Length: 341
Ligand code: KG4
Ligand code: ZN
View: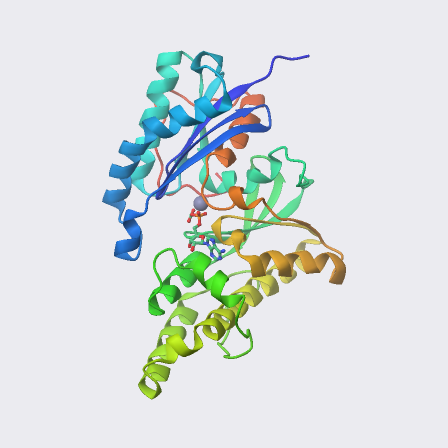
């Protein structure tokens, strides 16, 4: 039996500080400190995010090691999110990972955050099945909306993506129009469950067959609410559930229509979703339905691995470790990394 590989992973690309310990492909711990401060500002404030990471990183890492019931000396490598993300936030995780690896005299593994979201599907778990290569992944988060063709753990190419806002932004900015706190995506999901998805109609964007655009929908939504409020100042309160259900229905229909094009174009019917918005109950349900209606094989991540977490960085680190693909000690954060580099 080969010796088990223990990796500590650190994720700090946006507003959550997270650390995870993995043993081969089994997650032993995944601790997350959410930053609540941003809710007051209606969005992530980069300077506040990096300061909060600095405060959180030591206790979060300590907790992850403790929960995993291992000693620091058992670790074989440190994985960290190199990018994409907020530069100040990435720097906190990067410099912490580098100094810890140096002090323990173990190698470093730099991980691409977007690849991490996708590779979360390879975490060993009895409830989920690992997708076979090649598969398609709809990667939907607060910063990205992409259809990715995944040919191997680190061989990915973008088939289509948003030309403006990400889908998470469409949820969050529309939620702001409805006076809901940041991040509004989960709340729209919650209220949509009680509403009629066909109550209001919003137009869908016209872009390339596998590309997305959400800025037009965001503006149309704002004008729609403003117009309705001139007729009835209590329009939002009176119709919140129907508004959320109709908006969510529009967004999910856009996503599903593009996925259908991608499956048709590539002939690949193994389809996964990843990223924070893949927590959305409607997209999860609609994707699952395609197993019966279109004979797709679908891969839906566990909720805890949808929004930002270090477990996805840990599993990516494990596969990089197996490839002996370690980082140089002069590696630096990269705020603008693409999923295919
Ligand atoms: O992947 P993630 O945690 O961070 C980024 O890398 O951006 O994604 C965060 C995004 C936010 O826009 C949030 O509103 C959205 O994911 N989100 C949801 C849901 N849960 C999180 N959007 C819709 N429905 C949800 N249930
Ligand atoms: Zn993310």
